[in-house]
Length: 283
Image (cartoon, rainbow, N blue to C red):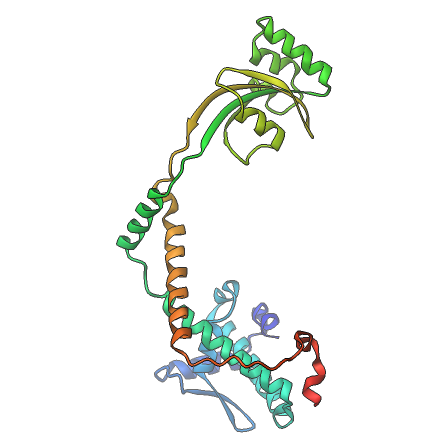
């Protein structure tokens, strides 16, 4: 309901402007009453709280559009809630308990996450990560991709007779790297299909291997160079480190709260399939 109303700025009426103007004449307070539904008050605080939870695209709408749409949404919700308030069954009551519990838990997590991670913590985590960093070898290879094994064997013979690898790649390779002399650039383990990768990792620099079959065809491979991978710079991984530290902070706080709580897990003998039994509310 609210999303439809908020996307139709033309639906803003003169009444909404009058309400906005009236609010502007007095200090904005959470308890300022904007509407009543059968005596139940809807305040500015209700509107502000709901606005803060809207998706980002709706946050950018003009204030008068938001005020009109949110107030109308709250009026409709209040009327609907009042209609069922005297007929709340156990399932509904327990669902509301779950919703309240989840909301409060989320707010606690956000409160913990609001504590900024310091530069010292980030640097320390980065240094500790470097201590355990094991560099991966990286490979620079070229290949000539052919449709049949016989074509690949012919290329191998030509290379053994002194043909230039890059020239043959440009002339005969069916792969997209052919125009570049077959050059694939630098790659590390896991970036190529298994048979190709296994062949490269078993080669020495300057060696030619093949034919090697993959799902793409038959490859003749030249290992041009190898190097040891470098650890990423701090600036490259700073956001990831900060996120990991925040997550660890939340997990630590959660663990502390659970450990400090008095928790009883009761042995009931209930069949786990009972979680699918909607009839429990009728017993």
